[in-house]
Picture: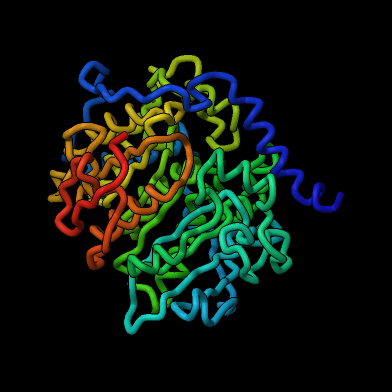
Length: 443
């Protein structure tokens, strides 16, 4: 009975997911269209010169996103932290150390704290870093490690075990919770992550109440913006650590946390690269698209993710003053990887690709390599706007990790990776640092 009560929230989540998966699109039984020429171009057309850093048009567009979708960037929200606690001095058989630090965002009684866990490789010099936001608590991300659980105690093992873990990983992939830290170490990366719901809970009503009381000069009004600020707070702490090269830092998120990674990269320009995997609507997918979940359904299902002002536009999406290709353009020339699954029609990879096509000119104007515009099946980790699509649905699987590390290797200046399952003879790749090897067919 105790086992059941402790895991009841996860069991309920999985049960609800099964209940709402009532059509083929949500179940991943359809395939995303690979045709883009027969689809409408994103509106409005972009003027690449308007996206220069600190330009008035750029500032105005960011304000429009705040006023429409995300609410204000919580400028000046205090960030403080404690000292690093060594969890495991010989992590992964001595390859690195596992440490955690408590970070506090806001001030007064409503300030929120979260535990950032970081795996530092043992290296002679400062190295690159990737920061991830997770759906599960640190007990599941670092199973078997004595990190702090979201309830403040020390983990006594992962929560996603038995039937819970079996169902979650079958539905959402092997790495939906657990982090393959050894593979990030193989790529020369430090890996950090935190449980986003420890900062702001992913629950309608409670999220808004927490954000209203955080105690900043400007408080966030959407969970996506609050989680994005969590990325920024983690970056502030880690860039000050001498083991991290502050000029080689990346953010990474899946699904809703892919959305928050994109937002963080726009409002915090210290970010050197980012991965937004299957970010969907309010992320990289076009708001006016009629394929998949759609912005209207998402906003009504998860109203706490977005600012209340979005309700003004849901009856007529054509009245939206912003579109997501503009968000991608605001990221330029920061390298961005947009991850996708061919069966993840719910997240609409087709419109994500078209958004990247439209934003690519901004990258090229800034002297960066834009999207490799040779179709949705092509993956070029060297591209400033890289597009990755594999078979399968809305999940994080082994092939995704290969794509992520290939992209980070290309943009954070790491040596060649020995091999990668995404570099196959069947899938066109144009990377100067990785050699093709045999593997799975293209999606």
